[in-house]
Image (tube, rainbow, N blue to C red; front, side):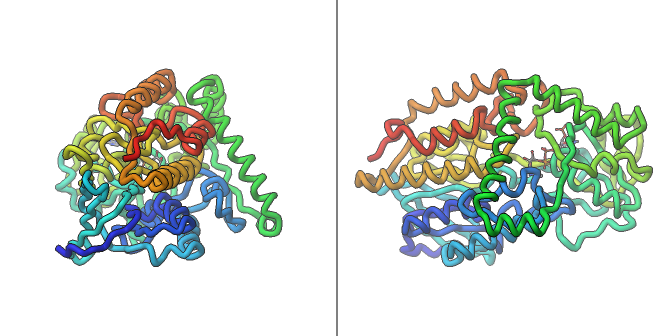
Length: 490
Ligand code: NAP
């Protein structure tokens, strides 16, 4: 272990959208900072997810930084490669490269109350351990990072190719193979159409059908791109209009369930237009209220499910054999390539980071018990620690980057205030947190997310610990004009 003297003002963990947004703000402020990234390149989820069909289901002009509008988005919904290119561009434009250390995995971080400094232990790709210190630690580790591998009897005996969507390699081909896909969430619905095209046969193992709306992904014409380039105000107006449309959808989740019924009708028509077989249609029709799980957008999913070389299996998976998946009805579905589109553990990233705050409290353990934060950013007993895109700050209806930018603004404000007061540490007052969590619980109670389906939005106790149950505007207001009395500076 190298115990260097390396001390930074701020250490940021993760170089995805969150780490990059934080880096841009830190760079502008002139603070000293380092971004640690365990992979060999920046990009987070958009570098990591390489499965065919991977794209963002939020329009690109909304799923981009407000401070870095991009006139060149090629279509309404950008694919993963285009988003990754955008992030690479941001890193160069804002001169973040010298601040990014790749192949650097944070193993643990320990807070020292006497100095207000975090000691961070980092492992390099070649196994060398190094310690560095930081006056503030920012976690931009993402909620959709640790793949969930389902606990299916016999899965370890499978002899074909086994892949989670998040561990796909670009060179992988399913050409001529019998493929099985487990899961019909956002990732499943994206990967199924391209696999159906290439595989000899595709079997889709569906536990719960998804609500799927048309995607209507259209290319921006050269004339539009040219107009956006020459008239940034026109591009901003486009973003504003996209934001307003998506905000309205958000209100349906908490306040206006009637709007969801209208959207359900649209989804049923979308299904009927592609699937003529009434039995198949029935099996693809969800039985829960739309919005309880993430609403999916696809024009290709239902046509893929209607193909003669695609089988929908809806009986529970009983076991996996070396070359087959056996369902509860006794059917042996022969497959030699099995894809797990089974999602992520939203607090998994925290579980594997040993972040120890005051009194030996470990963040991953606290979050596993109940992810209690204040506004999703600060955590009691973890001074000088800031979480980006953390618990209760994700969204089901619009761009999370709006939330992220507010979190970055709050973090900068609290750091500046700490330093202005000559304090060593800033932390949320523990007595503020129960009230905030009670507010989250109260506002989530009547929402569609707690209307009876099973989703990764809810924790093991059935509490919403993932989504923000209010409007983005409200969240932005609360973070950009913070109540400083809610924090101690000492
Ligand atoms: P997910 O939404 O959690 O879906 C997982 C799927 O796997 C569900 O259909 C689930 O069924 C199924 N499943 C899990 N365990 C199973 C088991 N043991 N047997 C059978 N089926 C099982 O995961 P995801 O599709 O990866 O999406 C996660 C999140 O990532 C999304 O909500 C979204 O926020 C994000 N994402 C976004 C995009 C985008 O376009 N922006 C793309 C991909 C992912 P049940 O429904 O019955 O649980």
